[in-house]
Length: 132
Image 1 (tube, rainbow, N blue to C red):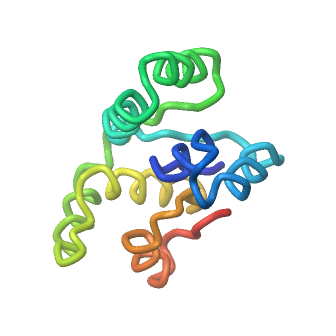
Image 2: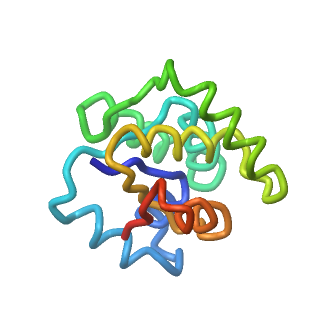
């Protein structure tokens, strides 16, 4: 299982992104189920719609509906999200990234992200692993 961050989605979609090739190869590989925390969904949809338009947003949402991604509601993650936001307030980590980390911690620890500024700090503490 891999929990997906917005930066991983953007890199896979945007051919001009410096990480596009790496992201595309990663997502085409045998990586198991892809999980998107519902706490991240608004952020991801906002970026997709505003950067690439409603057609890209529609394709993404249809992909979720067809099972390309699993949604994880993380009902029990709020305490962990609060702890992460407080612990990393100096970054600041923020709610969306904290939901990705909490979700990943429950689902094998792997996070598809290119946001090393935020996720790299947490990964060094050993609760998550950044992929690709």
